[in-house]
Length: 295
Length: 168
Image (cartoon, rainbow over all chains, first blue to last red; front, side, top):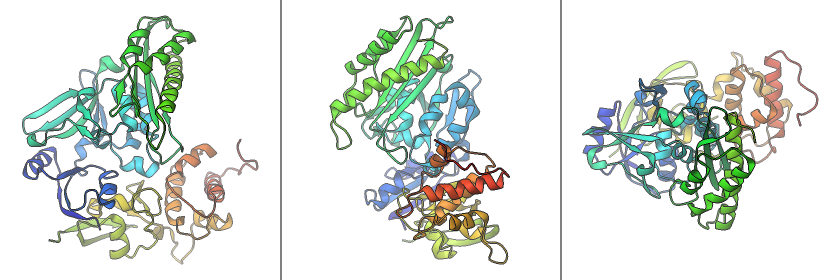
């Protein structure tokens, strides 16, 4: 038995918003692979829960008329990895979430939960930052959309307005963001399964038509700061540059300007800086190759 | 104040329903209300895989799954594998042949993941099988015998000869 005070179950987004307004102290539970574990550890003992797990309209990936890729917030990691639209337009996201926990966790864990936790190590978070994802929230005043960068406020804290009854309903990838883009994610962890990233690195590039020039390069890290973050200096440096191994090297060295990893029991700051540079280089090279470039 | 809810679902091919405490995990309900004792209470935080069951064709750790979420679902536990006269299934027999069972606590969870793997009808490499089995902890066998049992059954079901040399 879980130590919960009450369970409220929403069958629709409207019901979830109403329940949230009625019970502002309640915790939202999507797949539960974080919330239920925290309850077991006593951290949320006696909490009220609002389960949104039954809202099936929030599951699945679709394409909106303007070309925006829409990922319902309750889509599980394994379904994201297997989805044909994800595989076609943002394969790296499917690969990144295929490294979360183990198989059973990937069947229950949701992309909405992964982002609403506000955790820097979340395997989806660095890729969503690197692809300028937009978070869609639905509350009593309707739909609010904001860039994922603004969604993350600080470690464990995201911009969801409980007073407006908001829940996250989708993660969106604009067409401008994914078109002709190719990316690669590197999770550095101590084990291949059931581990949390020591550092997560997600790079993507868009090359010119002749594949010789970097039109745009983006890189984001998890666990390189209290929230997932982009390395703007490296991105600006690579923009418009000819594709080369030397560029990969300079791009990777430049990421250290913007990241600020900490010492923790998992790894030392110096070690994280070291693997950030190495991972950025490898992920950049791989991204260029995926985009059809030659190094 | 205790809060109860009527939960209907299909358990191992049979439609069932019962009033359930909303605080219960699916493991609690399967063990206590339906006596499905193959569903083991291991870590109870979704790490060890001992409580793994198949829900609508996918594997889930039932310890971090609310019992009330079972409403309308098709759930399969290890008990469903037994033949009409108590026969073991091929995958269970393979676990015995390969000495993939020692204390047996992780076995039902592993076997249900193996069932999902085998029912996909795909031929996986050793590396893929290791990844697919990675949501389970076994403290006795060292995993090699488990991998061999799953691999052997996969080849048998596909009607292919089992390679004699392990893959590099």
